[in-house]
Length: 166
Image (cartoon, rainbow, N blue to C red; front, side, top):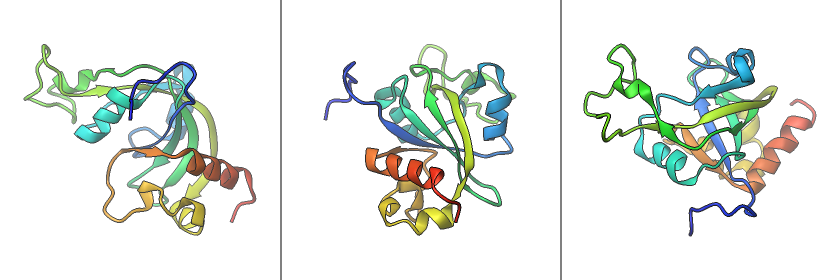
C-alpha cells in the first residue's frame, strides 16, 4: 500500500486519545484557532501514523481516555503535517526523552483543529453497535493513543452521534 496521499485521495480517519485532565474537547474549543499540537506521543507506531500516514484534512475522532466516562467527545481534523515535538527536549516536561537529540529527534506531532464538540459516544454504546465491532479502541489490550478508523467506521460513528442518544 502506498502511504503517499494523492491530492485526489479521500481523507483518512483517526481516533486520537487524550486524557481530559491534559486536553479535553472543551480545552480544544477554548484555544486560539481551536487548534492544539498533539504532543507527548511516545509510541513508535502512533508516531509513525502521524509521520507517514496522516495528512492535513484527515478526520479525527477526539476520544477522552483514562477518565470516568471514556468515549468520543468531538470531531476534529489534522491541521498540519508532522513536525518535531519540542517536549522531548524539555527536561521539565513529562514527555522529556533524554535519548532524543536535536539533530536526530525521535518524536513528532501534528496539529489538530476542532470541527465540533459532540455528545459523548461512550464505550458501552460503541460496543452495542455491530458496525463498530472492529474499531481498534474496543479491542482488548489496545492501548495505542492513535489508531486508524475505516471509512465505514467513521460513517457509523457520525450516524451514532447524529442519531438519538441511547
